[in-house]
Length: 165
Image (cartoon, rainbow, N blue to C red; front, side, top):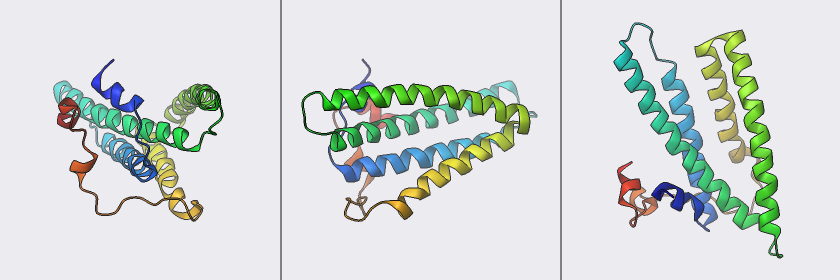
């Protein structure tokens, strides 16, 4: 198990940090998708490869942030009864896999119909709407994000390799 996986599998119990991680993950995905639209066929293979690899790394960080916040949310919202957390995780894992299949079909369809740049921008718009939705539709009384938090407080002191990433 990698250090990254260890951190993801031990989610934070603070809902404010979970929410902040989700927002950061979605924001990084939007940045990565819009940046990928700048890929040019006139670039050399080496430059294109380096650019795409850098954006893939950004996307991986975004994925782990979203995964960490999702696990925290399940831990916070699952009923306390025996086996409830396991049932919730099973249901969510199954639905996640179904959504992955649908995303693959939708992505292939978007590429075939609209092309590369338009497809990336349309996915970025959907993610931006997803990022904006909690600000408008979140019920009152839930903990808000943490304001004025320094990045170093989110950093994992015990996993230097994650901080370097």
